[in-house]
Image (tube, rainbow, N blue to C red; front, side, top):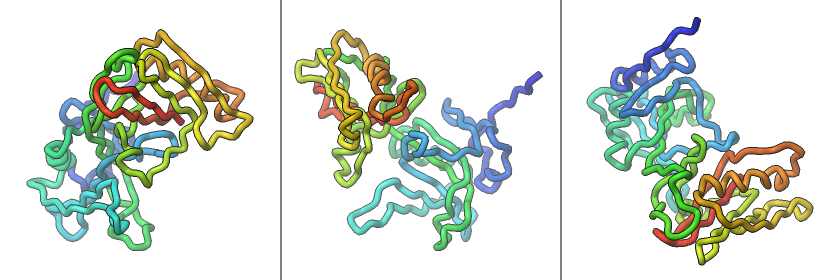
Length: 253
């Protein structure tokens, strides 16, 4: 018989005890639940978090918040933040005032205070932004304004809408590109720029009702673009859209 583990309230979980929690211990905050102990993995297609929070080793009331993005000088955004209590819940409460927190994870990450990068510290990874399910995004006709948010497909969280346009130096190694025609009734699927010629695909589809159906349709061609003999599922994707009612472009890999 399995034992039911009640989630820990994030407001009671200090950064000092994060690395003492058993793996998969659930932590709850604001209606969200995350399992402690597993780092996010971009190699497995997971979107990069917007913030990573580390405890300051020299001040028991302070944390370091690292932004995802770098400035023109190549410096990553860094903010030292003093909290009422140095808990996961207090950190999430603060970040939620910047933009809605949609996902978080507690794990061990490389210590940013260590110049050699040889040590780990307990860390809180945080994803923000409004989220809409792909099943709620119409594939034909005018759609919602997705800018500044994320789309979720079968639990897989996309990167931010228009992240590639907003950060020109960023490159996605997409295997498939799905483009909605200006008439908003047809989708064109083609191979990404990094797919070799022998694996190129080019398809058209109509009568797709939602973005969920578009991504499901694209999956049947993903293994071809990878040169795989076996069916594959969407791991990573990102949406580009100029605004409500404008054609969407979706990159999948």
